[in-house]
Image (tube, helix red, strand yellow):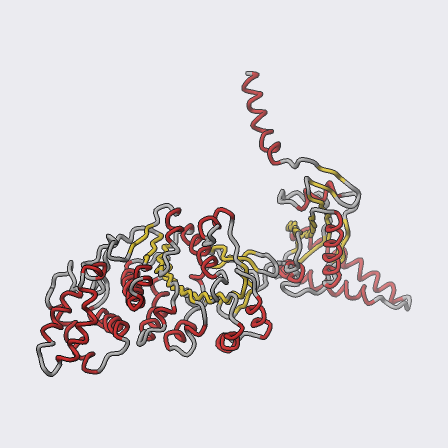
Length: 567
């Protein structure tokens, strides 16, 4: 029995022992807990009239301090009785002073009128009354810094017309009143109506973004407050990340993708540089699709999937214009005939779709017609590289497993060895994902890195516009990462992206391009200056019409996964 009793005692005392600070030194005007100096200030007076968010200035002030509210409802019957008694007393005092010919102090009249209003609101149920305590705990790792921050917080309280008191000689009771123990040992309260209490709610700033199903995207660079964003609740769920080389755009988007994946959002990345493979290697269940001749996966651009035939034909026409740069009216006519004929070869066979080999065969027949020979031969030359075994990844029936929640499509082969095929390869994968995203309504993110490679292609604008507009319908966030606004501005596809991305992250920009950016995104001079001088990973986050100073943030574990630094 003794052993059992000792074991139970150890369990009860072990957690407090582990959580307890190394030391507590209680001084008259501060208390030192471990390595940190603490000083508690109690707000003892609040202005008669306040407006919603009146504490924003305090909340947004930089510094290491905590705010603590204690709110307790008061029984309505008790409050009404107490106010009636107090009102009778006030009325008697005013009447007595008037009967003696004395001047009634304005403060007394204001107090009487306020009490009449509050009593009326309480009796009609429009308001309730609460006991309200408001404490601030200031922390610093030195006494000098503690005094400095105390002066700043005190000055802010004075600006807000808040009366305060430093809890000298009471720090030992003050600390438990601030930490989340729901234990108000100081009990410095004042009465607050429900409307006044609502106005004291400190989180009304547009610079503080909190979403129920959101993830931490970064922090506010001015206040160090986390930015918790749910992109799927915005006007549209598309995003644009714009920053020069070395500005930290990949780091920022990788942080977001890692957290989206942890929140059960499917992530698909079109990776032209092969830089996301490291992430995929350490994410449980992640998959890398090697889109190259040596890869085992294949994507057939002609695969109908969930699309209607006319929709697929239209997307294939876009693909051919990207491959060719431009098509003549005759070439468009030949291509239209050949595409429909290719699908007719398979009739009602739903498990198979035409391939580039079928199109090549049909173009071969067309080239024997003297009237269309020249144009058919040009189209045949476009198709020829995709018929060879060296590009079998696009010339066979689709064979890709999309069961993973994090999939990287590595198309770096086309960047390093076949630069002219980079844009067609990226389009084929984007169209494939567009086709597949219709199958379910789960949250999905499609990321197009180095987006300029595709956006600069001719005749892509209508497709991109359609994709950005329909992504929301299928609960999909389309995210484009690119280096310069010049990749987008003056380009129909780029304008479609700018108009249909509710979230824009702007990192450091080239001063030579800043005027173009400021005009397109309606930035102020201070915004432009910030973007020209921003450190790595800092800039401006635009959520619909709200601009927020942004700084990338990640844990040490996340940094090991997403960093691209050699060391």
